[in-house]
Length: 159
Image (cartoon, rainbow, N blue to C red; front, side, top):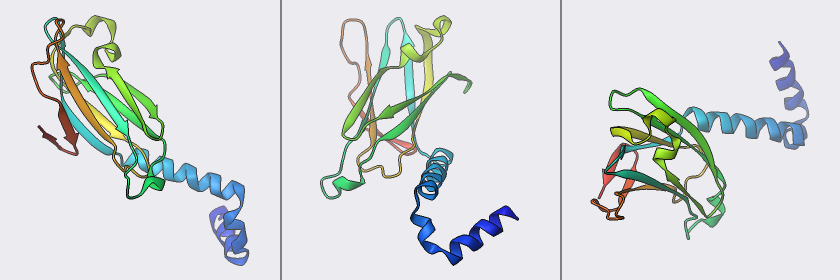
């Protein structure tokens, strides 16, 4: 009933659509929709005595359309080898900025250094993704990287 009344008022007075309260409500609905359907990337990670994983997430503008780059949030979820969630945390990435994370720092204290193999899920929740992407770097205590830098895309890994 209230929704029908509000829609009727907007039909009769279309200039109200550009008012501040309606713009705020529309922006909130868009953010909720992006969180409900994010762009997901996934890969394996390891946090053990002999190997650690670092995540690099970027939110860079595309030269052809720099106006599309806007701040975004990223939800990082760490799963164990059985698919159980170990940690989840949301981060904000500003326009033309990057996020650098030690995945082991997100783990609960008892699991740090104990995950031989797990999966990391990265959900980009921005309106326009432009050049948003994530890289993983696997390394050991001597600083040597036994694998190359990997670019992740939705559902696959490119090396």
